Length: 408
Image (cartoon, rainbow, N blue to C red):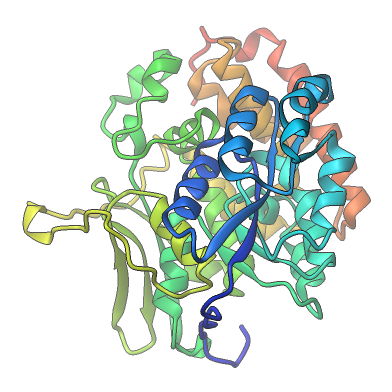
């Protein structure tokens, strides 16, 4: 870890920060626009980028009047242009347009709110251009944490976490010296299957898995929460965000989702960040660059909390949580391969092609079948992602990973 203490940067009063929202029609993206709308004197949405939901993007652009709106799906370009060009809003489509926008001078901070591997290249372009990153796309650091960290060094860019768990750690470290940190403790709700009998897990449905007890999130991250693969990813992300050795990062199950994460210090004290399970709180903090912005949102009322409980993760129930330390220990392109395999596994589960308990073994077999690269560069990550997706896709088609199989 670096020897400097963690500090925050004041936001100049009277300046409206220009925000690019990468993934504006998703869960985090729409909540980011809620926050921008809550503080019109501080923020404006200057770039809106969506995947394929062109109708929703048009509505957002007409409401927020960005400088440019971009749709990744090039087949939707004409619809976007016809709706927005008469209003003086520039439009574009395709991955190259997204990458070019991230290298432009049209924004100050980008909220990376896309899901999965797709966030990596735009984030690297934004770092190259010296923009700040409000990071909600955990897979960026999961896939290529070492590469991103090296690119940040010497850049004007800063990464401020938006994930509730990493935002909590960020807050607990404010004003603290890294050398005083003994352990980062990431909390997990346990998802919808925390108490489901192990014998029943092989037959859970997509509807069951999407029923998160506390958080409202997109389908992919909700399934990752149900399998606890998301905690493995958060362990990897924390290692790169905070420069802490992997053995100093752990997870604990906290069903109430009130304590978002904790930091244990060398004197035995523990700091915890608490709050309602609402992603707009860490989004506000990230956009404010560590400054707390006054809000009318209802605060956490401790008197209403009958109890707060904590328990060790059940690795037999949730083997996916092992993937974090496994990937960090093996190093190289391992985390990139795990992420690619997980994206294929989750998409296949959502389509009913594999069972819930097939997600973890599918990931592990993909790791075994994908060539290991010890010191990957960007091109190696691109290739590893492609190969792992192909391998995982081929494995999905085998009978061993069908929904009827009971794999654990």
